[in-house]
Amino acid sequence: MKKVLLFLLCILNFALCVNAQEGEDRGYIVKVGDMAPDFELTMDNGKTVRLSELRGKVVMLQFTASWCGICRKEMPYIESDIWQKYKGNKNFVLVGIDREETAEKVAYLKEVTKITYPLAYDTAGDVFRLYAHANAGITRNVLIDKKGRIVLLTRKFEEQEFKGLCEKIGELLK
Image 1 (cartoon, rainbow, N blue to C red):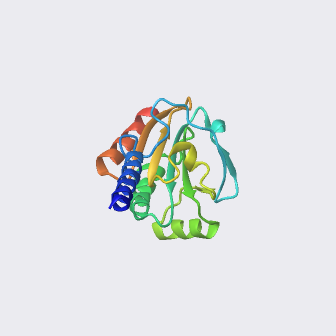
Image 2: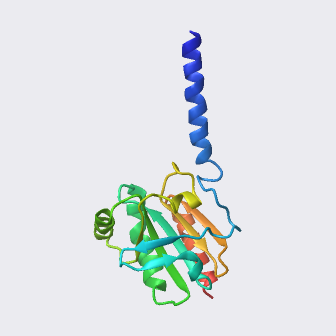
Image 3: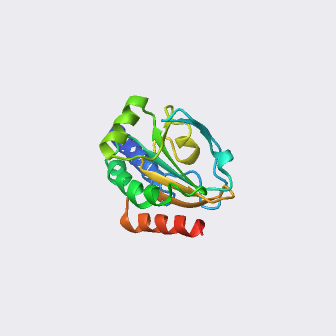
């Protein structure tokens, strides 16, 4: 009986820990107002992007993966409502960051979602872990102002939150 009780307590503790990571912080380890952690990644076009070199621009990071159903739902909206609207604005950069997948999977993801915005390869998940807990879910977006500070964090694809993201980008680019 004691073993069963101990086992149940262990399961409860594990469940509470996992739930806490998607609690108030929604799995993020950064918060609004923080300087965005710097990174360097290779893009699907072969170019390299270093976040610190984008200072002076509004930057949106979109963490995604081909296996993420919510990501696949959100990506066409990012394409139409954000990328198509701002891709010609020299003060805006959108970096999709594919988590822990091969170049072939990234190409497949772009094909099935019909997106044209650039995706970077975070093959080991190192950049993701600069922003969120290792086992935290995606999709998530990080909006960074021209000074390099995080101004908005989104999680999953909720219509009101996405609308707020679009509005915030417009404000920052005025």
